[in-house]
Amino acid sequence: MSHSHPFGNDPAKIGRYQTFWSREPVARPLVGFSFKTWFPLQEFATSAAWQEHDVLTPDMVVPESFLDDQERLLQEGEIVEDDILRGASPSQAVPWLDGMLGSELRILPGSMLAEERILPWEELWDLRLDLDQPWAALYLRFIDVLVARSAGRFPVSHGTLHGPSDMAAVLRGHSQSVLDLLYEPEQATRLLAQMAEIFHQITVAAWERIPLWHGGYYDAQYQLWAPGPIIRMQEDASGLYSPRLYRRYLQPVDRELAGHFDCAFMHLHSTSMFLLDAFLEIEELRCLEVNYELISGGPPVSGMLPYWRRIQEAGRSLLIRGSFTADEARELMDGLDPRGLYLYIMVEDMAEIETLRPLLGM
Image (cartoon, rainbow, N blue to C red; front, side):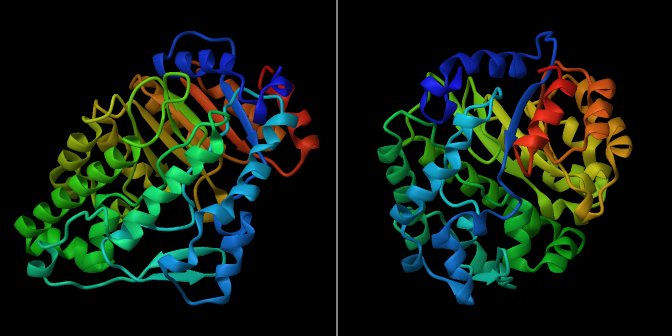
C-alpha cells in the first residue's frame, strides 16, 4: 500500500486517525513503528556536530542542512507497513521557546538544556514573544524551509516547546519556581499565565505558515495527524508540584491553553502519574501522550496499565510511545481498549516489527 506514496504517506491512512480521535469502536489500535530514538540531536549529522561546542547560537542552526537527513528518516515509511503518516518539524533537539525568551542553550551529550536564570519579577514582566528575535525568526524560517521541501509529500508541524511550568522553572530556577507558588503566589500565577500566552502565540504563529495536510493538522514528534487545530502541551516541571499546587496554579492555565485548540494533547512521563487525575479534570484535553520508559525509573507495563485505563475510562484518546517486548505487547492488547489507542513503537530493526505485528492484530 505505502510504496506508491512518498514516505508511505498514503492519505487513506487518515481514516484510522479520525477513528482514533473520535474513539469509535475498532478491531485493533492505531500502530506506528519507528527506528527513531529518544535522542533527536544524534539523528541529524548537522545537529550531532553541535556537540563539539558548549553553547548553541542561532547562527549554528542552518535549517537547509537538516533536509537530506530528514528525508532519509522519513523513508522508513516506505519499508515499514503500518498505520501512520510521517512528517517533519523544526529540530526537536532545540529548546526553541527558551531561546526565544533569552536563555542560553547548553549542549550536553545527546541533548540540550536551557540555562536556568533566576530573574527578578520586574524583568520577567517585560518578556514578550518577539517574532523578529533571532531564535523566533529562525524557528519560523525552519518551518518555511520544511514546507518548501515537502511540496505536499509529507506533513509539517510546530516543533516541541517547553510548557508554562517548564518556562517558569528556567526563568526563576527549578526550585525557586515551586517556592514562588508558596511564598509569592500572585507573581507566580501571573508568570504562568504569561508563559501560557506566549506558548499560545508561538503555536498560532507556526500554524499561520503551515499548510494543512489533507485537511488536517499534525504533530511530528508523535506522527499524529488531527482533524482540528492541534497543540502539543507539556508540563514536565509539574513533576515537582503537589496535586494541590497543580490544581490551584497550573490547571487553570493548562485549561485555558488547551481551550484554544480542538485537538489539544499533553505529553506526560510515567513519573508524573501522581498528577493524572488533575490532568484528566481538564475536559479540553482530548488526548494524553505518555512516554513508556523504564530507563527513567517508571513502572513496567503492568504498573502503567491502571493509569492508561484511567485515561481511557475518562473518554480520552491515549497515545503511548515506547519500546515493547512481545510479552509487553500482549499485555497492552489484553489490558487496553483498542478504541482511541495509538501505539507509537520504537524498534531496533525489521525483525522486531515482524515479531510485534501479529501480536498487535496487524
